[in-house]
Every structure is written in structure tokens, then in C-alpha cells.
Amino acid sequence: MSKIKKRAHAGTLESSDAFIEIEPIEEDKIKIELQSSVEEMYGEDIRELIKKVINELDISHISVKVQDKGALDYVIKARLQAAILRANDDEKIKWDKL
Amino acid sequence: MKLRRSMLFVPGSNTSMVCNAFVYRPDTVMFDLEDSVAIEEKDSARLMVYHALQHFTYDDMETAVRVNPLHSIYGLLDLEAVIRAGVDIIRLPKTDTVEDVLQMQEVIEKIEFKIGTDKKTKLLAAIESAQGVVNAVSIASCSDRLMGIALGAEDFVRDLHTQRTKAGSELMAARAQILLAARAAKIHAFDSVFSDVRDKEGFIREAKYIKDLGFDGKSLINPNQISVLHKIFAPSNNDVEWALDVIEASTNAKEKGLGVVSIDGKMVDAPVIARAQWTLELAKASGMLGGDE
Image (cartoon, rainbow over all chains, first blue to last red; front, side):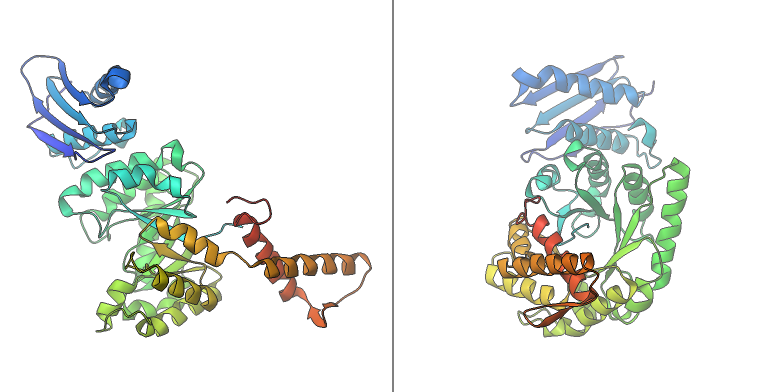
């Protein structure tokens, strides 16, 4: 498990997209703050997806703030992965983990 | 027969378009990672397209990606992503020489070998310069992965020291050269985008013109242009009736052991039968004979 190096964000606030901000935190946990128009119906699924993506990349000690504008699962995944790669200045992508 | 009338450009950074382009049923959807994506969004657009290519909404649609040039820092990263994601076609930007195609092919082969895929990614070369047009004949036949060549008019007219006009005379030589090169190599020929999305009449005029020239299809930037283009490429009812008569007459002739037959006094030989078969395929794809649309 590793920490991200710095704050980063990815995405937009346009329809069908999501704006995701991440930052490193002291506690060994995945802290999720979600704003979504479909939170009541899909909030739990979105949270599970975020945890899954973060776990697959072996990340811990992270805070994730998501403003969802009706994004499909793969959009949230792509935006979160982009933010994590940016936070680590990662140019060598481990494609098997995406 | 795979129809390639419409190739819809979708900027990889436009999430809404990436997620919804399949709804419009273009023959091919072309995700763009090059000119329509800002430098600071190259990474996120690449990831978006990587996931979209694997989403079930694009399972039954031909997919292409315009990648950044290999000499840029993004080209190789784009290829690594989209070939893993199973893209059907890589559109090469700004293809000037045979070497441009062969270099791209070599990189793609290496990635395919590395990831262990059996899929052979096809190539589409965009001709966007005077040098590219002059070399179109050799480019078109340099690789068995090349499924087509396409005119990229915006960069081409800049290179020619002119600008695009409604009449399109500035593209006359390039269109002729690209079409002949493609036909000689037995690959597809695609016309450039029509940029003024408000000018429907102009679009229709240009689409009819390039269809009559012999192009297989056209790159599009607006989903609203798809159905208009498909209608233009659809055969007329008279054409379909003629094609059905030709196929019936040639089938009867074959059964009776006759060689050449005639319809309305006109000889029906192999090229005429081939044209009739092509017309019926187009009619099927256009929903005229219980086909797709």
C-alpha cells in the first residue's frame, strides 16, 4: 500500500462527467465525500467503485471528493485513475491494474 | 460487406460525446486524442477512451482512434492504451511518407506482441499535406494493415497556401489523387470533414459530390450529419429495382447455361452484376431490404 504524493484533480462539472479531487491524509483509510444527483439510488455503488479502483492501485491514506454529474461507471473510473496518476506524477502506467 | 460511409469524430476530452456517440449509429466512431484535446487533458482523455473502447455500448460498432504523432511524447502512450483496449483502427495523423506508416506499424506490432493479442489492428492514413498527396499512391499500398486513406482538408489547404471554399476547387487534385490511390490499392477512400455544421445545404452538396466521385464515406464532426449522409449514400428505389432485375436475370441465365444476358437491351456482364450486388448490399444497410437502419 502506498500514499499518493500530492493533491490532484481530474474531470469536469459538465453533464455525464464527474469532477474528482484527491489528497493524501494521515489516517490509514479511504475517505469518500460524494455529491451526486443519483446518490439515493446509486450512492453505495459509486462508493464501492471508488474503493475498488483505489484498492486495485494499492493506494491508502487518501481522501476522495467526487462531484458526480450523472457519469457512467467507466467515466468515474477514468477520472479517478487520471487524478491518482497525476497525484503521483506517474508516467509509467500499470495497465493491468486499470 | 463493411460499410464505411460515416466516420464520426469524437473528441476524447468530451465525456458526454464519448459516452453517447454510439446512439447515433455511425458506421465507425473515431475517438480523437490529437488536435481536439488540449495538452493538459491528454492523459485524462487517453484514459477515458481506453475505458470507452471496452464498454459494451461500443461492442458492435467499429472503433477508431486518432492518436498523437509518434514523435510527440503522447503518441506511444496513446497506442499502448488503445491497442490494449482493443481498438479496431488507428488513424495516423499527418501521413506524409511510406515511412510514417511503416514506423507506426512496427510500434503497433511490438505492442500487440507484448500484450499477446491475436487481433491485428488496422491502419487508416490521414493525408494532410502536399507531400502526402504526392506520395498517396505508394502510401496506399505499403501495408496490408492499411484499410484506407483519408483526406484531412484543413491542414492540406494551409499547406497549399489557400483556404477552403464552398465550391471545393482547392481540393480537386487531392481528392482525385487520394481516390485513385485507394482504388488502385483496393482500400477505402474517405473524404474530409465539412466544418460548417450550420450549412446543411452545403454539406449535402459536398456529400453528393464526393459520393459521385467514388469515395466510400466521409469524416463527420456532428452527429446530425450521419443520417443525412446515409440517405445520400442509399441507392434510389429505381437503382434497387434495377439491381434486383440484374441479379434475377443473371441467376436465370446461369441456370439455363447461358453466358451473357441483357436487360432492356443493355448487356449484363460481370462488372454490371458486381455493381448490382453492391447496390443491394447498400440497400440492405440502408434499411431498404430489411437491413440495419
